[in-house]
Length: 259
Image (cartoon, rainbow, N blue to C red):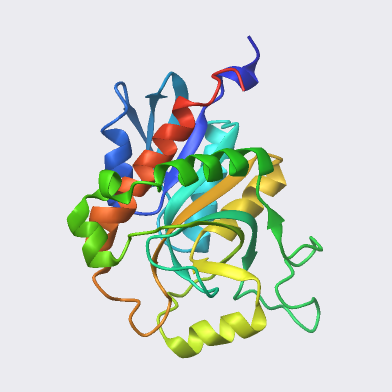
């Protein structure tokens, strides 16, 4: 059996609630603490996994990714969490599966083009298509019955009657986009961006450097506007954490152990 087969898949969660829900499904998790981070090693559906909290922001997430790649030799990283919707039609309760990721606050111009990572010649990092296809298919199936997923109360409160799955550009930056002006500026500068968050593109860059597949799946918690602060904690606990667990669980359940 090759080392690739036995190498774990990393599941990186952005929020404590998501990680806790995931760990509750792992029958044999064991903690390894490195650099102030708890890495949980175990299995889900017979798949070897390492689950970890990314921490918030690009630097923290990139450090977490580097440790997964170096210390645990993971064969893929899948990032779950929440994001603010940018594109028209990307609404609260929808899911975005990234096809590309970009740092919207990276600007080394005029030495390098805006958004381009210096010395790499890249601004957009491509997510793994095979994992993205599988996650999108799982999400389409799972979101057909939002009441079964999160309950009627959450569906009514957050308006989750017809959640959709979107695929495209996810942008990351070291600030929480929470005003209509900021959101509109991002739409003008990056008209194909679907959603905005604070970690994904940094992890994608680390995975690119190591040649390891990366995928990101984000639940839309707000519209990245003046109402973005909302009841964020309740949404994460009652909706996003349940989305993440259901999607990752279903994906791993259907994933052949030898791939």
